[in-house]
Length: 365
Image (cartoon, rainbow, N blue to C red):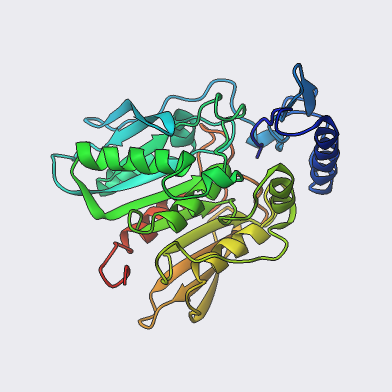
């Protein structure tokens, strides 16, 4: 994960040097190559005018973005459309998957937030969420971060202005969600948001700040809302989680937020401890019974699935810890970047969890 370029007008030269040194130490501690980008080019540096430039963190060779993303699979009769949304907070483009069996009936909507350096097309190809959504007749929207907002196309989850309801990027993504709900027949009780890495951290923010809009969230290799408030705390949180581990319940609702978490236990970009903190944040309003299941993908990775269940024994929060996996979408396709085909299918499991958790009057009480 990388972070927003910071101007010298906001940080003095001495502060820039201190932050640079901190980032280098943090990356080294996390097992990353601090002085190189993903392609071995010179990395962290000051640009003309005093701006600090952050390249993508170096990933294992099998997880590097492909030179040319594979075409997105679109089922016969389905559509993969482009669109945009604008508000006083800014504008963002998006891609929308409309399944072949959509005929104007009310259907679920999944909001998918890509990670750093990715695009909606790349993320759709890697997660194969369109294929799973086609089976269940769901709309899927992929908001696109811009390089103008973040030079590495990361969602700015660490910025205080982008962690609040009706502000910054949360308001833009919520606006895209509502625009799709206005233009298509979306079941308002079945609207969900998920993401990878920076996109997962953004999904956690949206779940906490818009519990009236999103019925459940999926957080893959991400961080809890409030894990960081600036550049240095972001790097520290990525390396080891938020130091005090403080969990904040969703805004305006003392309830358990239905959440499914995926994280690789060999992730050296975002520490697995962050997955624990996402779970703690979603459970801040209650303590639930726990059930643990161990399993293995045939011919693939082993995993531990921890279920926090309600009084009827139904999972309200699921945590999948994938053994041997790094910073990559579990069970994804090599057609996209940052995927691990050997893991359990995160897309299929997330959609299964989402459809089991429609928003109800009781859940909003």
